[in-house]
Length: 250
Ligand code: PEP
Image (cartoon, rainbow, N blue to C red; front, side, top):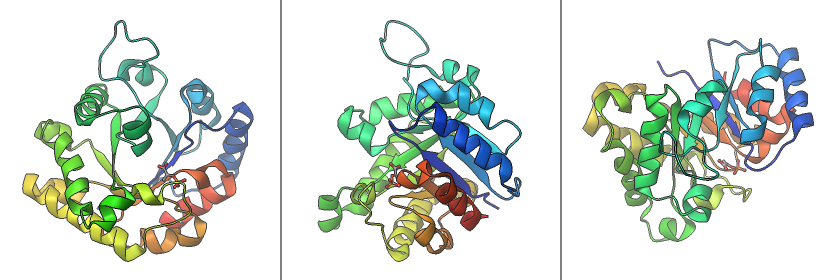
């Protein structure tokens, strides 16, 4: 039984006022907390405020990235233990914007996943193909390669802590969503690949879809057999939209 997870990635957006708006909206909303997990992933400076504002609601906080080392001379970087001190429950690793804009490679992403797991933080590993890779029918190879690059570097125990988000790069922030069939096809491939590692792991690992998910398309995407939740960008910045997506998952 996989509990759906809806996670809102604010990227470099938001403000103290928006945290407060979300805190108020969440406290007015009745969620069946055991039926669904919910996370808001604001920029680093807002983590403490978010943790406080969401207290008493089932919403947990996540971070958008971390560095794969424990401490040291890494100006600008943030470690897993620091995130832990701020009540962070999830952390994104391998988001396509980090892969492209910040040149994070598979080795860096693996180090981040390990560092998070060592601190008891759940890494949400993002995988996804570009438009060119989809047009060339290489999406399975790309996505499964990104999955294997992390899975192969983790122990059996560590693998069980992972959440995976399939985010086709061509659907992120473009308003162009993968069809439920396209998304399900890749999710099924991911789950089949997980079976090579461990049957039980494949049955239990949550696979999220991300890429222009919004209230209007959430239900259909989330009803697919291998889609266990969503990673939401743009629509996670509006309390009503984000809460509507949470209800579609619950
Ligand atoms: C994301 O960046 O993870 C994302 C899914 O963005 P959007 O929902 O805006 O496409």
